[in-house]
Image (cartoon, rainbow, N blue to C red; front, side):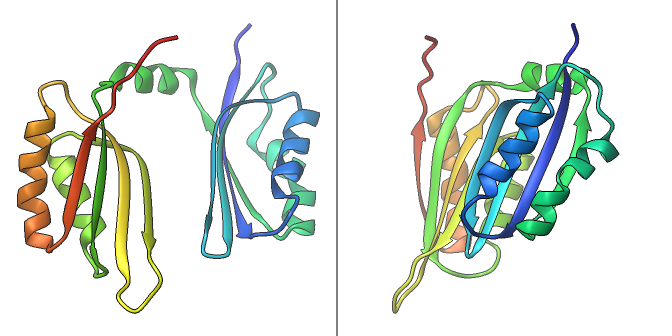
Length: 183
């Protein structure tokens, strides 16, 4: 039997019960949570889920299911259907040549753009990105990324690329190859 996939995003002021409210809706509708990520951005809780279900549910019906979450918890909920072909295409695109990249320096506009634009030019896919500004007298901007690079890009190649880009931006960086193991 074919599964139907949806991407759901939830965002709003952080408070207890958000995950439980979202999970309750998904459980009652028979959904499985395939993949999820959540984080706190300042005082805003944000969650992204990829979910699947055995029966085809309309986007409108699914959005209506989140009425209580939207009203009681004052959350914004967005739903998008993902076609099965889109998921297969994404899996086939993954290079699995993974690196952890940290970029850090004085907080200023353009750090994310400068690094991400250079990565895009070299077909390096950012699969996870986190940024923070540290507190204190001299705040430090920290960006941590997991990137998936084409197989011809080595740690040395990535280091040379970042040397050039980070030098222009006036920031420092570190790179570490991620070893993957199959269980």
